[in-house]
Length: 240
Image (tube, rainbow, N blue to C red; front, top):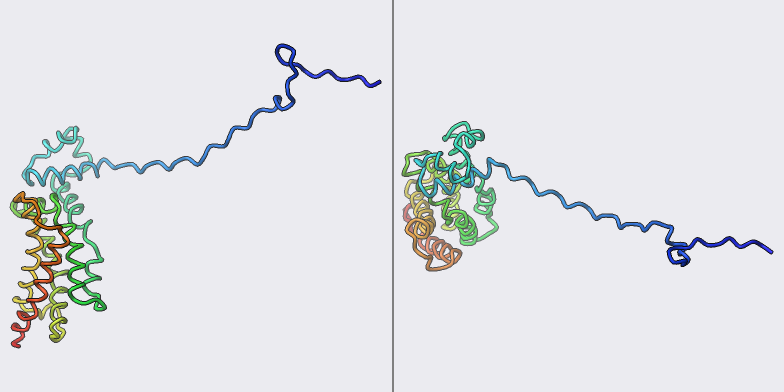
């Protein structure tokens, strides 16, 4: 008769199940979440500088800006050579980084009717312009005699205004000409259109009035008024 090997027993003499000897397998942890990108201290300073200069103008002291940030003035200048360097970074953030190549492409897109081209451009453009910090930085820089606004306006004059002029000439079926052949009267008419859009920002964020209509509606009405009236004026420029 075969000898039976006794089973090991647990506490109180109970037989321990065979599976108890095996360690339980822990579930494998899921993939680790990707770390959030670190916010550079320089970017934090620039964002606060935009709000600061929009509030007090470019004569505002960097010592006061440092107080807003909760740092010392020497700590601020670890990131910038001097105040002019900081202002240049503000210019890049407010103006250059928000300039969209899409604007020029849509103005050049002859597959779209002129009204649609201009409306699409100016609605997208106005979404950038009609913001508190943008318009106040623009006005503060101009009033302080800084060249930030002049540089931006020059860029608009080189890359936007001629395109709008050519679109209207095309709409009126005037001969195609070069940018240098556009007349001062044609250019001024488009600058007046620019001014109408910018006034929406001034009225709201400088004068402090509540908008009377949604921005998209106001811009569409401005563009349609311009396009319906401009052909007659442009034709008169050409002696028609």
